[in-house]
View 1: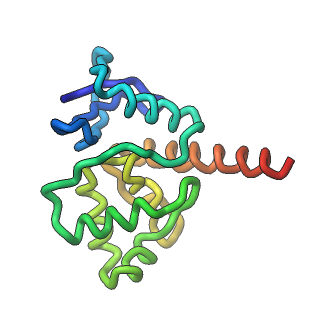
View 2 (view 1 turned 90 degrees about the vertical axis):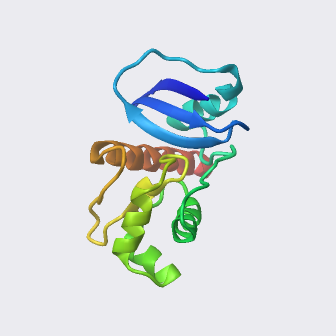
Length: 157
């Protein structure tokens, strides 16, 4: 099953398995928007994320076919809180590997945004790579930080 939706970062093509778990997300050139009814719950979550109303996705994913190491890295990545970033180096220290190995595993992340590899940056504070492009990574980080700041301010009032 396939869906295509327009977002602030461009058109996302979303692939689902037979049980409608998200299997892959890619950025594509402008296309006709189509959303199968079975995918509407996920698309609602995706839109809420881009509107700053959803901080954590609660939708099934399918990362079968990845190595155990990749799954371990992606599981760790899913624990990075919304609006925060961590370094490749810190992640590497957590699972006793190299920052480069972390970067390579994140490069194979089939579900960017949902598995928030955009929250992993270089030790010098620069972005590092991203499968959807550096500009998208910067946008996602700034989007999450601004939403987090607004929510923190609202909670203080």
